[in-house]
Image (cartoon, helix red, strand yellow):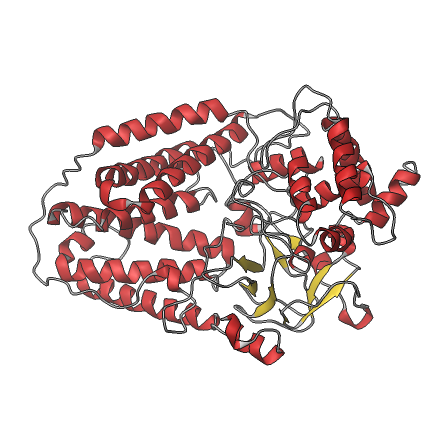
Length: 557
């Protein structure tokens, strides 16, 4: 995934449903008989305990590791994120081809971050609007995906058939070749914080990669052997392949390191894009990049909330949903700057508070591995480990029924312990944990041998998790994000099944004002209506718009 906060939106088979990943909206045939309530007898307790122990072991092995795999350039929020369009000149990059489709957006060079460049809305854009469609210049092989970019990544790029075009077009990526060349010529004249940051990063990269052994694609290049020769080998490789800068000069070791830095700032797991790379990072983005699906070769970028005219269009560069503590550590480790807390306001601020004192973890500049920061990473590591197990068993579920039951119990235990330790029922890290538990419940419910008692228990726990998840998603993403569409559909479907099987079981959940059939029936109706509202915001119109723009022919579909 390129976006941890966004699922892949898949095409429905033979229909116009952009919410294919959300499951079916149709009701299953259900038995109307109310079943006798009995206590659940989950037979996988021992497996659940072993999974938790395995996760805990990995947690403590990795507790000192910084999270995250990708670079990102944190944007400043507030009024500085909006431009006066009346005095803005568009940025022209004549050497770049246009994207397959571009909506009501404008590429400019007057932003306060991201090297000054980025896309802004040229008019007010509603939620779900398609703003960019682009094919990658290069796709990464499997061994690179999910791993950090290194010298081997640049080597792979130089071996690509279109390497000349890649290298020359990437000269416009932040930090640009012109910027780096000017910094190298006069390192004493770094005109701003951004220039100084680039200079420091290049200096550190050169230091690292002159004291590191070569390594396979996707693995760290840091070690104990001098690799100056490896940088020179890439310079020689470029020379042999006729790869030169746009100005005709041969590539240097500085060019190699700048290309690596550009990948770390702008690269995405699905490939290297020109125009998508111009979208800056934001902790709370207003757009999502959707991965290519099926035979499609292009990626879509859609808005996930209303964007005002002049507002910067942003996506998340982070590999997954992270706490503020981990985002802060990640950006400090990769970029040597502290994002601070000024952009945390209102609900976003509340979602990051930890402990009985309602405090934020301290800056990495001020302390090393504070107790609350360590807690964040322990929870994140445990969540990632359980997600890995879920991914493995989902591929061949038929032989993993007991593991799925154990996973569901483990996710629920992780949620309970996290709430207890965080002392904040609205914390951002509870979102991926609740999502994991809901998905684990869905896996368990696929088991055809489930007794009715166990099925009712799983459905009840799934209902509570969705009920808890929805307000957190709304706080973080806003009301129009497609994640809320999926959660509302899940809630409507699980309530529907429980209403047909055991109304008493629903009423026994002791949720506020939810103690009658009418109350639960009303909630089901509201959830399904909200799903349909959000679904309508995301028309499946990419193919139509591409046809109109004459960039694709029918044979491409």
